[in-house]
Length: 173
Image (cartoon, rainbow, N blue to C red; front, side, top):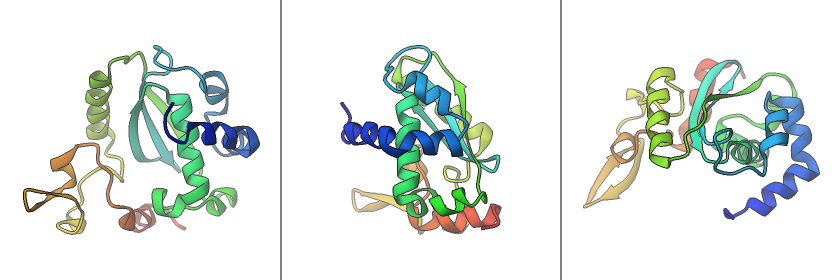
């Protein structure tokens, strides 16, 4: 079991189900697949959109659970992680749409390859390179040299400190 998974299930039962049902389009999907792991229906690639703007693309062997984790993170630490807070969502300034892009990807390498392909196609604002943030958007040091996000992994998000600024470039908050 992933770290924090029990807490995520507890959160879902206590208040998460209502948040997911009310503020996202994946309530029925999560209800149906929140315990399903590694099957064709839940292993794949998905996209998160705010007000129809692609924010991030991810992959999972357990998308129903991953959606719960994302909404929980949004509620608990949304401004830092997602550039928005739960109050903005509750006020109707932001609509959350999670779209399942591909399913049936049981192999992790296949999911990661598909995720990179979808990132290149949809250009989600947290995962594409922006000249404005370089060279400040460095992720880790290796052999005495700072590596840029895309030199580590192509699906790397921009640093948290830039996410609110990036969201505000596109959304009126």
